[in-house]
Image (tube, rainbow, N blue to C red; front, top):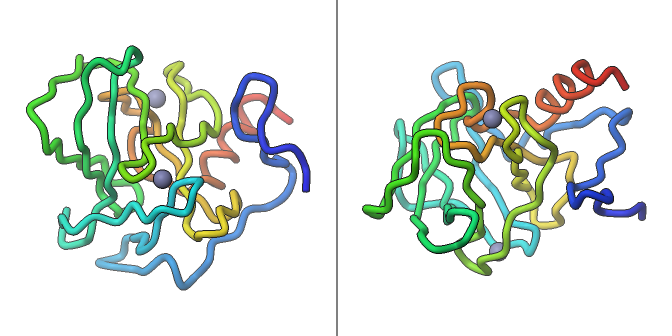
Length: 166
Ligand SMILES: [Zn+2]
Ligand SMILES: [Zn+2]
């Protein structure tokens, strides 16, 4: 077991290791990859009863940095899809950086690394054992066009690796 977090609090993932996807947790629908299970770091399921584009979405709590306002958000489980549903009337600024919490334990989800836009990219796990190699990621800036969509964490990591040429 290596260390779990870097000095700056982001999750430590040995970047040279290749990431694999558990085939049974990702299905294909209309040519797109859809995740069917997702967990916080404490093993709580994030799957929602609410469907987006015919697929069950993922439940999160978004808060502002001061945790003064919050909203229940459902994001699309279709990888690459930016659709989100805000279940509350809470309004966030167009480019606001939010904290993303698990609705069950209200812990902030682990941060994978910083997006090109400067906001943390959050990680969710595809299995209850919280294996970071079986994970998905997305940016926490409202309206980020770079990464505010669910995507394969290995794809995000590859991009990150290329950017900083490890
Ligand atoms: Zn939780
Ligand atoms: Zn971003």
